[in-house]
Length: 394
Image (cartoon, rainbow, N blue to C red; front, side):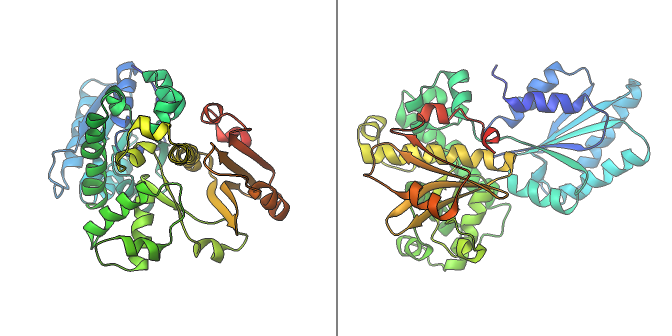
């Protein structure tokens, strides 16, 4: 079975002396539970692995019960160390307070209990970690699957990856687009919004949130003001509500609104967002098209290529601590601007979707980025760029 890079990272950390709670964070269906199973199969540390998936959310005592069971097994076997894994921990009310209490008790009593927690809702994990468990955890981020991973694990070629995206569970259905689309909508999109987001945040207009997600996916790669979005949505809302919902979708690593690059932070914040999916599967699933039609229609294919490049950049942003923007001035534009500290990298994506664009030159003259280059036609091949580790450029 294919092992993602986070497998080695977690395995290495568990071999170290007990110090921090290891937290696996990432969007739905990217292989978090599979990865921990792979690690458990190879570890020599005795363990107890449990899931809160079917535990009533108000059962605050469940975590303490599991922790007590792990301590009892550790003591009965006279094990020098023990590993407790709790999956879907975020589904329980006040989970972080319960974890903090038990972790601190083990620390006071010199109990060598190592702990891994996982959750399909990045939003709930984020809230609990920053509030109750600050200073007690390390994060292992699991982003959407890259082109390299989908190619190595499932033999996907470049065009298939650009169109079908990076969900491993859908790879076996790419020859049956109808079945693939149902899988993405029913097993990924619906649970991500209805279970992860709506049970995490106070969303007063769930229908508006879902409409915003659908619209945002269909407009991936395009700039669309919040006012224009409101005009296309059926449910009543306002710009502030829409901005908050878009931010929530970004935190869930589904859809984001890139801000326009500027030296002035206020201008960035008030700019028209450029919508971008974190996984091109979300774009494909929400549009009424086919692989053949998309691939043979240059303007359509250009949007998919740009979204694939954008998703590649977005999924590495957290890990390598950079921010991603776009830039436009009149008719001149740069598709992506990577900012890390005082360094900027300007990236233009070309795939025959539009004519000449002086954006890179105008941007370079104005902002003097450390690097600027084209991905696609007359530049770095898309297939090569999608294998790049952005850390090497920063």
